[in-house]
Length: 362
Ligand code: PEP
Ligand code: MN
Image (cartoon, rainbow, N blue to C red; front, top):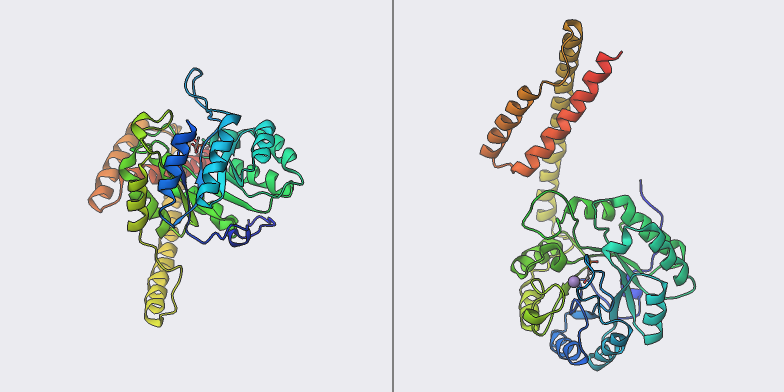
């Protein structure tokens, strides 16, 4: 289902923004000099169009650096003025909003730890009524698309039409090389539901380390994101937050200049023709896949009936474990990833059990 939202495109937000929109600046404002020096160096690359800095930092444990607070707002706005670019910060409640607006912050974002909280989002939405300011909403910490959409809806209903989403990855139990698993499919599903909502990728918080920011940023560009938010600090080794993932301005410059920005579409009839051909193939393979899955479920039904007739339990876990091992081995030989295969097998198994359960209890 598509969702209706009244949105103003980024190009009309009044800051001359053109995709890809690059948002950069330190994770946190730490001192007037740190913000100014970082921003002046970042802004040497004209691709940077919005300056960021965190003023209030939601930390997991108390006693760590929780942001410089209101005092830092003028460091940020002064740095923005010095380089002639709009500035953005994270707000987490109505007080932050009031202080940010008073200081002249141009753009706001809602952090992942606030998007999870409907009361917090509603408080901010209510405080934003009658205010004309662009707001980005980061994905919630947990992989819950509805919660992300709900947050966006609350702001839109309060009259915020200059609205965008920031994809910063999700916290999951599954071990991965990322600090926050990207789960691209969730962001792409949001895009499918809200095709006019600008989507920014935040490779810094996805990666949690400098090492593959470039790679994730490129992937976002290849997936047609509208921009990137990348943290940069004049000296990450002494940063008071997210030290491992911030890059020095020179590294940001290198990342931005090596990004390949591909055309959104093409008019070349040869390219279009080839693409059409490949898409036809996918359509036809999908049809075959569905037929085969349906066939598998038919057999599962038969097994269910057989188990019922002979009074055997549905789940025979050793058989399933052997099957999973075998299928993963076979699948990997064909170049499929273990991660994909596990999810696929779990899903097939779940449906199989559901069907057999129905038969057993008929
Ligand atoms: C940040 O942008 O510095 C931040 C705290 O991000 P997130 O809300 O994505 O964790
Ligand atoms: Mn950060």
